[in-house]
Amino acid sequence: MVDLLSWPILDAVLGFLPSLPTIQKIADVVWKVAASAGVVVGGIWTYFKFIKGRTFQPNIIPKVAGEAREKEREIFLIATTEVENAGASKVTIDHEYTVVRVLTAKALARGEEGPIEWGERAFATRKILQHREHLEPGGTAVDTELFQIQNDNFVALRLEVLVTSPKGDTWTGVGIVNLSEGVDNTVVSGEGS
Image (tube, rainbow, N blue to C red; front, side, top):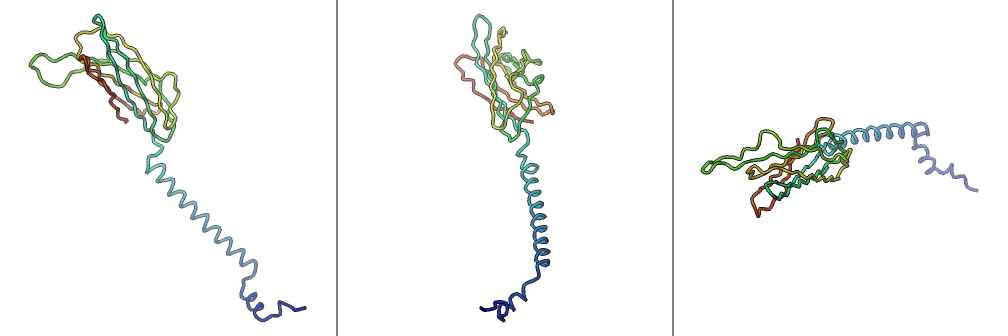
């Protein structure tokens, strides 16, 4: 039988290898360096994903549209609100201040120029989305309200949708309903703030 440990080459190789406690120390140092690097890389990713990228900031897109019909000097307005959560985090709704408002405008006198003056106060205000506690990321909520308005020679109605959160964030959307006959009333997107 041949004694392998007596071979000169194998003896040289085994003499070159460090002892077992030395190997354990090296492995421990490598492990600590890798764990530290992982924490640093994770911190940088978190910074860019959550803070710099604003990915998880609330991002609500409210839209409002209306359709009006007149009958016997009464305007019947159907206001449809659509609220989309385009962000990546759930947004809780403050039901007290999440509303749709209707403002009215009369025609300018013949020969007058300038912007339309909307009524100083909302003609009507209704709470919306009362059936929803929150909006999930990517979710959309739709609400429809019917308003009956006595026509006092109004030329247009302004619809405003306000969506608020308990944290005080507010998003608004605006739509105009032209009361002229044969006019298509399309959705106008809102802005978040």
